[in-house]
Length: 112
Image 1 (cartoon, one colour):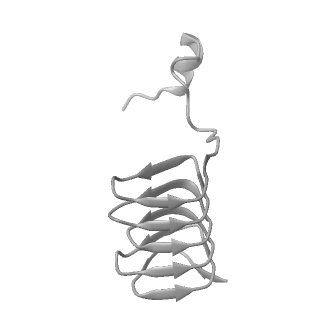
Image 2 (cartoon, helix red, strand yellow; image 1 turned 120 degrees about the vertical axis):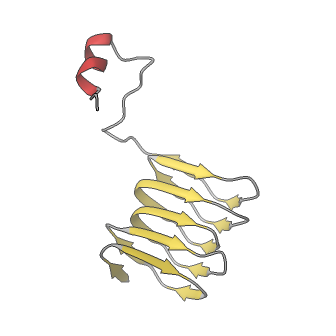
């Protein structure tokens, strides 16, 4: 298992799993085989393996993913191919404005 601290960009081929509290970028030239467990990831290449992100998975370009996705936010661009399941996990920091009472909403909103 490979770990890193902040940000990592992968180009070319990589075989193995990655785990980090940082952000992982998979370049459009990359072929990745292994599982990913990170804070955020932006994917433009091809992946065989499961992807878990604590905050967000964003898949762009003409990526091909063969594996499951799990994150609070999953963004998938036109042209992306996925063979697997997408699971949106609950993020405790989000508020559903349609089912929350006005008083609860006022407590969760901060004005900048």
